[in-house]
Length: 338
Ligand code: NAD
Ligand code: UD1
Image (cartoon, rainbow, N blue to C red):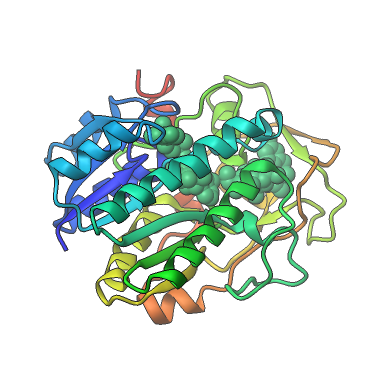
């Protein structure tokens, strides 16, 4: 396996994965419509790896252009990151989310199928587990009961992929359920670059640290957790990227349909993250306690055994390093990739 097509490869997780794929010797081709990213990221990737990224501005909703990539290259496997991911926005614009994420994926599968390319790695999310009854979460926990259209798109795409693989065993599909990716490449050249006011915890913290926002709002301190604030399984984005490189081995083994959690197996509360950020970077993060955020769950962390045994993958970086690298990217790029 040599030529890997990465959809959404200009985005946060995609860009880090492109770096690790190039380092592992794969020939990477990226398509992205840049709706939530910037093509300057490819200059940064080239600085890190010394390899130019072959990229094309293509929307998954544009079947003609999408097809042209499969005409031009002999693709061996597709890693499919492209999608819209803002939870709040998905509640306000459900049609756009369902159309972009689901139609985009159906277009991709149709064209792959036409070209007899039946190897796919898909970005799913721990959001498909909804509010788990117990933790840690194993891959066989019930899914569904999502709390927003974004989550439903992940759940529905998983179902579509399972049905397709069941109907045609030539398909090899790895579904990766990410927990909470944070951190950045240690060079500080690539990282998370959110548009507008961040929804997620770490980009909000780094924007407080750099003085863009006065304080962090901590959403609820009355959950049944060790300090009352929400507990999550934060994972370094480089570890996550390496998980995709390992998943390619599974594709090569022609393993059919496989599902893995990608997390660290450790839960940290909002206040744990704030404390670790402060210690790692020597910066105070002012915060105030606010009411719970609608749709939030108290606790979510993964069981990592399946990925460890079957993929030979395990997260290496701890929470301090995640906090250091998130801040390193933010302080070196106060205005993102501009
Ligand atoms: P991101 O927004 O940074 O990257 C997604 C990329 O896809 C962007 O570059 C965007 O421009 C592109 N894109 C969107 N729609 C497209 C379309 N129709 N055609 C072509 N390109 C399109 O997001 P990310 O954080 O890197 O997430 C990558 C994937 O992982 C997404 O599918 C996301 O839902 C999933 N995921 C992310 C998280 C997270 O916390 N970041 C957690 C779980 C799952
Ligand atoms: C959110 C999404 C989830 C998505 C994931 C990754 C919701 C309800 N869930 O998960 O679908 O897959 O992002 O993109 O939006 N927090 C604060 N203050 C903030 C921001 C967050 O206290 O300003 C808290 C939250 O209440 C939560 C924790 O920090 O307890 C993590 O929040 P976040 O980073 O948004 O991730 P999730 O809620 O786990």
